[in-house]
Image (tube, rainbow over the protein chains, first blue to last red):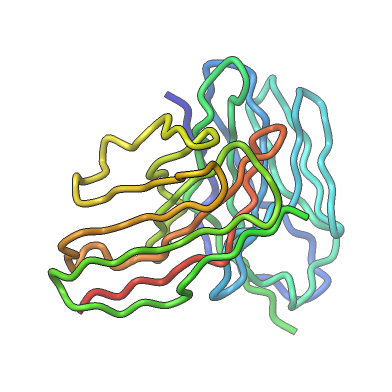
Length: 114
Length: 112
């Protein structure tokens, strides 16, 4: 079945540092890939998505590129802020032609210090 | 607008009691999902609806759990005879065009 593997956290950075959170996946079909963010006490929010190979999703300074050859979707940001402190989830969904049940990673906690 | 509201936001109950949660989509979406999330974990799929039809249900889901979406709009999740292991955050989400998930704020259940 499908699976998503994320780097374990917490990831601890100083403000303005460069961020990478690694995500790799296995899927039987051609999934869409997603990053979600969860702030303390809240539900998950869609951060960005990529729906086919070589697509780059971007939002709020975060980027991730759909790499089919390495089955990866790493999240990056050039300069993190304290307000980026949250838990980040990588996920995939096969959608049309496959299962409509999304698969989530276990999440990576990001802590940004001033 | 792809908002979702969930009520109640917090629920404390005693073991053995029944509880019901409600999910109200603000916009129309065919697919509606329920998840359970415990501390330090990602969302765990429970069940989903395509309009009013419940299409899939997790094999891990106990018979004590039941969900409905009677008119293809709002949905309810009921847990009968609650156990301490049911304590978790229960999340409702709507599925978008690429099945991206639009989550509600969740209902936090504490079973004493």
